[in-house]
Image (cartoon, rainbow over all chains, first blue to last red; front, side, top):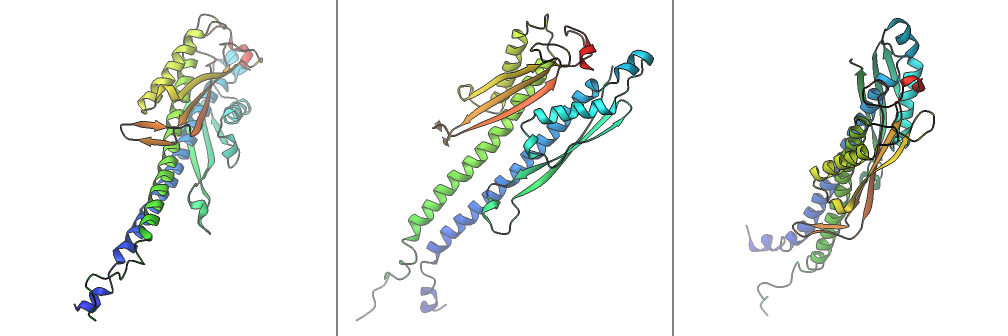
Length: 143
Length: 162
């Protein structure tokens, strides 16, 4: 390598260093945004589990239980209990749609979807400003 | 004239970039660290509110109006959850913010909804070994659970649940 050629690269490390730091920061921001999605997923699962857990007992058809001793869930009542649990949560404004409640005998299955908003990706033009996470939980009352 | 060795070439493209790069790095690191601190605190307060609510609704209470011991135990469980996440007691709070039965009364009865709210004051700047400085964001989480209508140890009947 000639002396002239090596001279052209002088000082380039000083430019590369801030660029490198910027790349590190961008990667860190992506990591924070992804952790937000993970956080929302956990919250969605906790909310679905809490709703299913409450509905598995509070949604029982009391008339049927007293008349025949059969432990069956009342679909209307179960849906109402799930709706109350979700409405009482601070995640209610982030719901994509109403929770889907499936009742089968004594089993209840709750599916819900929540929006997860990004913090840093928002500033990138054209990038999505959030993601939708889904969670499902099933519960059954065991005597 | 001979060209001096080690001249100033490249310095214009470098020297002013050094403080700029340092500034971008310091500010960016603080921003990302603070964002992560909020996410981490949210995980902690979520767990604390959930633990407190679960603990409360599963407590044995002698009387619908006499639930102070159960509330204290539930708050303790919430604080323990926060401590398990490495959070300071002085910056956190776990409170029973709602206890309402289906007929609108406040009391530990079957089907009553207990709501716990956990908060944590995230410091603006947190340094290793030294601790946090300043009052940043207040991260809050709320969790509610129904008191089981059919379990033992709860005053009242389940008829009001229907």
